[in-house]
Structure formats: structure tokens, C-alpha cells
Image (cartoon, rainbow, N blue to C red; front, side):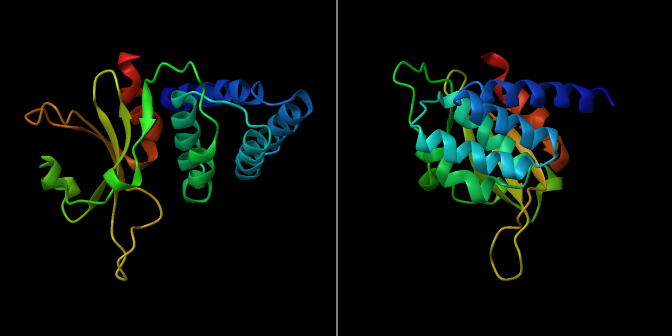
Length: 186
């Protein structure tokens, strides 16, 4: 129960910080989406407003929006828009979304992940902390036709520069803790 309330408090704060990036009326509309339980519509509206008004966002904010979209099942629909947002010019990079070239699905063993819970799954490197070089990965099952399953089964936080260090593995329902673990050095 404590984890849920901690996540809810974080999400309320994040929605408020994102609303403050928008013009006043748009910010109110964005808040209203969440209050009405229409988070998916709110994420669509947020992205439309950020792009239309060319609102610059930091790399950390970009990562937080991507994680929020993942939490609400909107990452695939919003990813290209998140990438298209204007970057903050004086942003001190801290977290960044990994490029599609470095985010190809691989078997866990190729990344030094040996935990048997991930056997038969594919790991997709996702967000990197530029300070400590840890990486947050999504871990997916593969559908019979070859695509990755829509929702991640697990998330891992690993240290590629220290291959002898076992990654932390988080259940698919514990995305917030995985993101928190990645960002602990910030």
C-alpha cells in the first residue's frame, strides 16, 4: 500500500509540473483530464500542446513523460511525439531516452543478465542515466508472430560499465520503483 501511495503522490506532482509547462488554460485542461480519469487523453493533449507551442523540455522531463506514457499504456502512441519535443537549450543532461539504434531487443545473456526469471524474454535498453551510466530496460515476451508483447513483463536497472554487477529486476507493475532506482544518483 505504501508503494501505491508514494507512486500516486509522485504522479500527482508530475502532472502538476507538466501542467505548469503549458499556457494557463491548456494546463487547466490537462489537469482536468487526470481529474476525470482520462490520463490517456491527457497525455495526447500534453504532447499536442508541447509540440504546438514548441515548449522546451529537459531530458529528465522527456524521460518522465516517456515513463508516464508507459505507465498508462501510451508509450508506443506517444514516443515519436516525446522525441519531437523541443530540447531545453541550457539542459544539463541527466537522463536520456536511448536511440532506436541502441534499443534493439536482445536476449538477456547478451547484456550479462543471467536471472532465470528473464529466460526466453527480450531486453530493450530504454533510458540511460548519464551521471552513473546505469540503464533502465524494458523486458518483453515475444509474440508468436515476432513482435514484442505490448506491455513489459519486467524492468531492469543495470550497470553496463560493471558487468559483474547483477541488475535489479522489477515486476512489470513496479515501473515507478525501477525509474526511481535509475534516478537515485540525480
